[in-house]
Length: 66
Image (cartoon, rainbow, N blue to C red; front, side):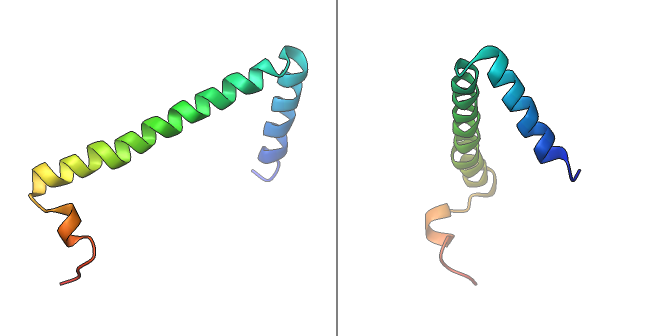
């Protein structure tokens, strides 16, 4: 596990050297897509399920501690 970051860097370097910078652009687009999907899931699906399944108003109970 100590050498895993170095191994990933070596894999990225060798693949970039083989396939060019287009590979990094494709990986960046993939990362943006995954993070967008995770954000939609976290802020959309999660909040809607909390609201509909527990009947707790998220906006009114976010700052209050009872």
